[in-house]
Length: 321
Length: 237
Ligand SMILES: Nc1ncnc2c1ncn2[C@@H]1O[C@H](COP(=O)(O)OP(=O)(O)OP(=O)(O)O)[C@@H](O)[C@H]1O
Ligand SMILES: [Mg+2]
Image (cartoon, rainbow over all chains, first blue to last red; front, side):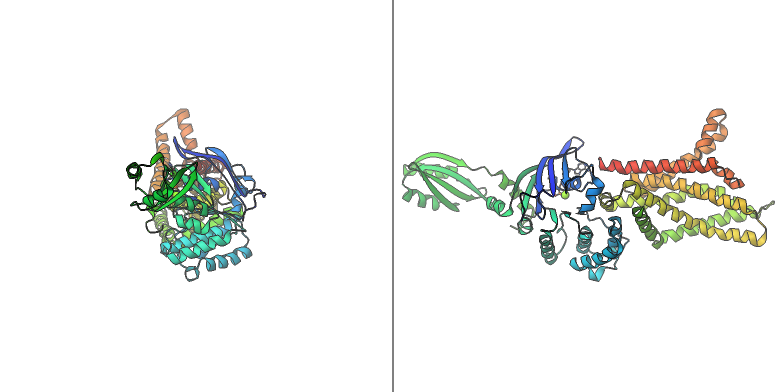
């Protein structure tokens, strides 16, 4: 995994991009260590593509800087581009070329010599399972095979840094699994940034996740920590003075309560109540406490804006929770 | 340089695989033959290719934009420009590669007309000087029109828009030329100087003037420079 002492492969500071007056991303900061697989997670329009376009040197930021392998993407653009493999969001393919010719051209403009190029074309065609189609015109390929050709092109020149904008969109489930395994396999030698709005994908492939929302970083964490925070529940913290042996079962038996935990503080029980999203128990709890003659000292819903964002995300992908 | 040739080679391959290459070749050959025949079968037939040189200026106004329209428009439409611009290739190498490819397509439409020269030598004894200079003039004139086409192609992701824009610009340049015949004095001189077709005249007469050569190269370089700037400006949008 990542070594905190090594110099980061990618260093992003204060990254801001305005389209006219509209801030697509604002003050984004993060670093990525060598061999890490970092996921950009965010809903449509969050700014993922914008951030990636700046990272790859396609367009300069309005403010802030990006360093890749210690080089600035604006000042040393040409040098930086040699380190990068990029799969843009709309897979850029020449429809009049065959898969093999396309790969040969991409290798050519990246300065690969013919021996290396020949070996790598065979490699990536095998890796991306394109054997059957290597001589087919790209215009005649299905969406999934075009996506695979796009991935093949991105990894062709064995780049140190691989930037992929929604790499698994449009490919069948078997190939999705293979692509994810492929990406996982890159970690170690290659540093990978990929964007997605599929939550489970992130936990499957990424060693770290950045959640972007409306151009701002909402969270950066390991996926297991995040998914911990992310279960689609709401939490209430309630302080009740009363006998734990009576309060606990009473709350547990309320409709809509998923789980109750209790800690004792100075004779007052602090109850952490988990409920499904949208179930508001505050009124019923206060009635219950009143009826039993206990004391209600505090009742507070725990704010989880992160969850709300994730709910929006998961809403977009029904059935993948 | 290697990047430039890689890009040029890619375009050349795509161009010559497409039926467009042969359609344009045939259209130009037919038109050239027509003008050639009318010029050599007149009352005072002359063993020259002058007959199709001047009509070619109008033909190129229409054909050059078709030869160049896809060069940058399509890269924008397919999104491949994003890939080119994030590859270790300089913007000018991209443009130069495209330009070289368009020159190859221009040569491909001129070469078939050489059979007209063959006919001339068969039936008469033409003066090879004006024929050679005529071809040089056509290549230079064509080069200038191609550079306008490439610039137009950088401005739009729509090939038709790019082609029509280039035709419009080239037509205006020819109209300015016609208008100059009604002008006098320094204005007329200036117009004559910037006119694309005016510089072709001496080539047709068999005179190779370095001024004319320099003119076409300066014009072309300026257009390609504008194209590079147009490409750069995409990054700042
Ligand atoms: N060229 C542009 N000009 C103006 N606004 C733009 C441009 N590109 C993107 N935007 C805006 O910037 C914001 C971020 O867009 P971006 O494409 O980076 O989002 P994203 O996270 O990649 O979304 P998605 O998941 O839909 O791909 C959006 O509100 C979008 O409308
Ligand atoms: Mg996007």
